[in-house]
Amino acid sequence: MADVLTYVLHYEGQFNKNSLGAVSEGAARAQEIGGECHAVVVGGDDLTDELCQTLGTYGAKKVFRAKGPEGLAQPVVDVMAKVIDEGGHGYALFGGGLLGFEIGAGLAARKHAGVTMEVIAVKAQDGKLVAERPILQDSKISVSRYQGDLGIIIGRINAFELREGESAPAEVVDVEIEYSPWSTKASMVQRGEQRGADVDIEGADILVAGGRGLGKAEGFELAEALAKAFGDNAAVAATRAVVDAGWYPYAAQIGQTGKTVSPKLYLAVGISGAIQHKVGMQSSENIVAINKDANAPIFEFSDLGIVGDLNKIMPKLTDAIKAKKGG
Ligand SMILES: Cc1cc2nc3c(=O)[nH]c(=O)nc-3n(C[C@H](O)[C@H](O)[C@H](O)COP(=O)(O)OP(=O)(O)OC[C@H]3O[C@@H](n4cnc5c(N)ncnc54)[C@H](O)[C@@H]3O)c2cc1C
Image 1 (cartoon, rainbow, N blue to C red):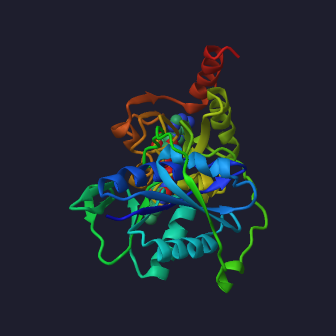
Image 2: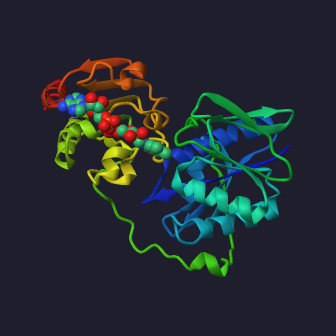
Image 3: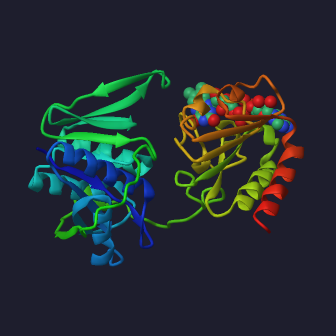
């Protein structure tokens, strides 16, 4: 029997969807090994009892709440290490994302624990948890088992399905914490938004992803117009080639050295479909590609391929979607 501890990021009174997926996964797997899922939250007065209790909906039995800066890794490592020391949790589970990677790595170093990153599935075996992660450019799956008292599992972005359904509110436990001196060296100066990152691309249902075929930075206006026509659940993503060229911010980069996404619709425009890009978007539910080259590799893993000039197709597609949506 072992309990699972997760970290839940929040911003302006809302919990991060990816973190809620981790709570759902932690709860389901903890139950299979006879344990409970608990969550850590760190922040200010906006972390009210009522808000924290809602994590019970996703299966968290307890929420450990500490006062501290939200969105910085080291203070969260301090809180999680203390909760684990006192509670004896067997696993720490994160939903992925840059912050999850940083906290998970920090916790692994602090607790001398084994860590597995980019996990896509967690399973219960013989009363313990094992983590599955793709290797060799996603061509094989490796299974990690943990030695010692603590195993750290860091998921791929959105790898864990968000499940609501539990009715009991989570118990809220306040944690008194004295932060390590190095944990208070960094402070959040500004939490800003940059072009292309103002929508949560990891949480968006529809992604319009632009590549070098857009021709120049201004070409992204076509992608932004199309995403806007789709509505609030759509965002713009990019390939590394255009990020390196300075056409679009890194926050929107999909792929091996960017983010991993799995939206309902991934619309790739002017993207060749290099393997390093593919690994970040291949688990999308539907992939549609627009490319003028009928032999572009992207068509090999697209559900629908449109061969043609994106400059002609995208404005028409945008108009058609606007018309369909009645505006
Ligand atoms: C270690 C490493 C890590 C990497 N990590 C990443 C990563 O995280 N993410 C990533 O994306 N890449 C990554 N790359 C780069 C990757 O190999 C490719 O170079 C990159 O994905 C190509 O981007 P692209 O598709 O935008 O450009 P290109 O390969 O140049 O493709 C442009 C496409 O646009 C089409 N096109 C051109 N004009 C039009 C038009 N008018 N209408 C329609 N189609 C048109 C062309 O036919 C072409 O297929 C990495 C590479 C390495 C070596």
